[in-house]
Image 1: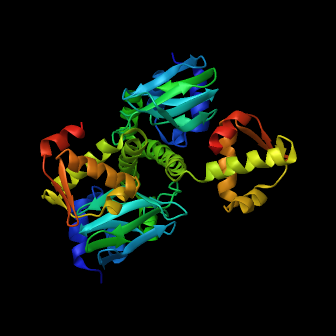
Image 2: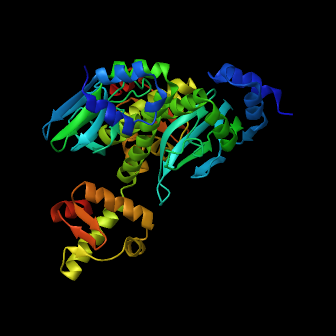
Length: 224
Length: 224
C-alpha cells in the first residue's frame, strides 16, 4: 500500500494525471517516497539518477561544481516546484551533472527515476511534461549564465542600491523598479527580475513599500 | 506546389515523419523555404520567431550577446543539424534570446514557426521531438558554461585549437585572436598572451597567416 497523500498531491501537480491509466497511477504512487532532508543535506550528487523530486515544503538549491569544488547556483526549487534534472535516467539527453542541497529543512516526494521513465514511455503526455519542465529551466540557467558572463546588471544594481542607501542614510529604498531602471540605464523587467534574485539570495527584501537591504555585506561584495 | 526536395529530406531527418497524416506532411512542406545565406549573414536576431532551421550545407554559429555587444558562442550547427531555439513560438518556455550567423555560405531549410507549432499541437510525437532537440542543446550549453566558469584558459584554448584542427582537417587555423576569444568566451588580449605562451613552448607557431599546430601531442595533453 502506498501513502494515499501521493495520489491527492499528484492530481494537483501533474497536468497528465487524468489522462493516464489507473494502473500507471498506482505504479507511480507505489514508487514514490516521502523524504525529509534536514537543512544542509546533499540530496543529489552529479550523475546518479535520484528520481523526480517534488518539493512539498522547504527549499532546495541546484548548482554545478568544478573539480576544485567551486560552485555556481543555477536556481532554487521552492514549495510546489519539480525537478527533472535529478532524473537523468528519464531525460537521457541531459548529460551534465548537477548537485542539489536542502537549503532549509525540506520535505520532498521523490518518484523513482526508472518507474517514472517506464510509465512515460507508454504516455507521451508524461514525456512532454518532463521535457517541458526541463526546457523551462534551460531559460533560468541561460539567465544566470548571461549575468555571470556579461557581469553587468547585478553589479550595476548592487552599486546603485548601496550608494543610494548611504546617500539617504537608510536601508529602505522607496523608489519604484521603473525609477531604478532609469537610474542605471536598464529595463524595468530586468531590474524586477534581478531584485527577485537578490530577494531569493536573502540580500534584500522586496515589497510594495520598497526595497529593504538585509545583507549589506553581500551587497557590498557584489559591487566590487 | 512546394519543393519536392523537402519531403525527401524530412523523411530522413524527422523521426515522426511516418507517424503524421498526409495533410500535416503537406502543410509542413508548403510552409518550408530553402534559403541561401552568404557567409557572415545574421540569420536570427534575438526574440523573433524565425522558424525551425535545418542546415542542409554550411555552418551556423549560435551565440548570446550582452547589451554592450560582447558575445559568447554556445554551439555551432553543422550540415544535418536542426535548430529549435530559433523558433520561440514553438517552445514557449524558451524565453532567452539567441543570435545565429552563417559562418560559411549555408543553405538552410526553414519551416515557419507558426506552421510547425500548429502541426505539433495535433501530434505529440512532434512536440516530443522539438523538446528533445532543445533539451539536448541544454547539455551543450551547460558544457560551455562549465568551460568558461571553471576551466583555466590554457585548457580552454587547447581544447578549441585541437577540436578546430580536427574539424577542418588541417593543422593551420586561420582565425583571428579576436574570433578565437569570442568562441571560447575570453578576451582577445588573454588569448594573444596564451598563444604567445604556446609559441614559446613550441606547441604552436603564431603568425599573421594564423596558428600552426607544431606539437599535437602536447596540445592534446593540455586538453586532458
